[in-house]
Length: 286
Image 1 (cartoon, one colour):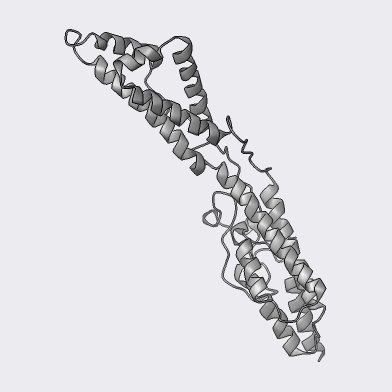
Image 2 (cartoon, rainbow, N blue to C red):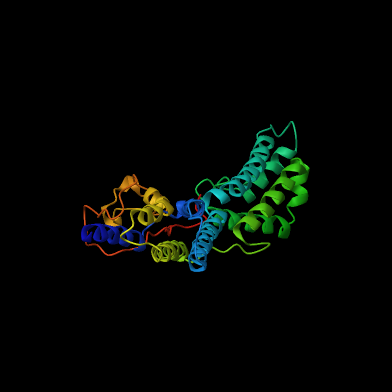
């Protein structure tokens, strides 16, 4: 009997100790826990499960904010801006290449190219924020130096309209116009994921209050309600991860399901450290 109670206590401890999770999996873990919840739960257990759901939503909110200002989200507006300038530059270059005796616009086009693009468009290696700055200065010069009428005489006005539209879109994307899109705090995702981990542990503790260690059926119900933890828990320390297991946000993929209570084979005595998802990057880099 003593061995049975000791084994049950070990199992309960494995679930009630905070466990690291990949932030990409928090909502799925929360939904699995909700679907696996025992049919009869106390008010305390229901509140603990609701807290898990709230923490999972908080993790997703941080991830959504990061996606809004991540490089892929800015790549489209940046490329549209670069493409609009390239089209204008190309059209001016095409007219400038026409023999002067064929059209007097050739000299005007060559002058405009030398004025606005003396070194070409030169935006291929510039990030979204830099592209916006360069574009703003070019548009201000076009306005202040009265170059727009000259440009519209040489090339179709549609090209300038495209530049204006692309600049407006890029301005919104980088936060220069419209509602300011702010990057969440560097530790926001780290803290949200840690809160989720602690909420899971609190839910497990709440479930454990109705477990009789001497009753195998109670322990089986307890483990079935928390089986999602086994599927998604991270069982290795961050220092033991290989480079291939770390993605661009410093997060990790879940390992194969393990038996609760399994120790870290590399450092079984390592203290618990919540997984960090904080990307160390410039959100404007494309």
